[in-house]
Image (cartoon, rainbow, N blue to C red):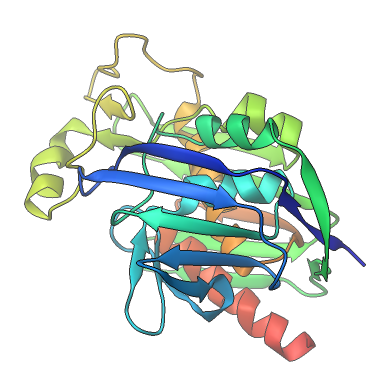
Length: 279
């Protein structure tokens, strides 16, 4: 039996939304009264377990039953997951989470500085006994969750862009490893995509301070890349954040090939169906 932990003192984050370009604030508040993560938006509270998820718009959206939406949640959710914070009240101001450094480092560092306390609520991990597989044959994408101990990820990306190319990374999820290897890795976009993204109303808050912008020859950021394989590491960050929406730990080895938020969330829906059958 695993008792859920919450933070002992509030932590807040403030900045610009990646896609909206608007001021955004998220306050993470100690929470003991109900099981799991609860969002507070406009004075109303929404349990994470009541939400559905959408990942087709360059980020993950949480959609609640009254159609209230919070966008770009994956970087915060990844930090909460790896630090073992399974219970908290997240008070949101603005249409999305602040993008901050473009990864999870600011979220993870500030949250790791506060004391964690156990609550009276518990949530056992979801354990798999058979593989769970999602495919997109048209785009040759596949993601599968295999039985395993703890959570580990093998991720493969393939881009025609020569700066990104093919990258592969294996990661066993731990808090220490996340802070060093994954959390610093920033979201990224191709320079050629920017006009299309802007026309779709996206990336209004994106800058070289919070994202990697890639041409056919190089990353345009002055400091370049933090890691030679920063792109695939960021994909792992996104996957952890999306899996965190399950609302409980997952014991599995996930293999993802040429996927993104849409495929991550297809897997998540399958896992939630499996969870409901096990209860």
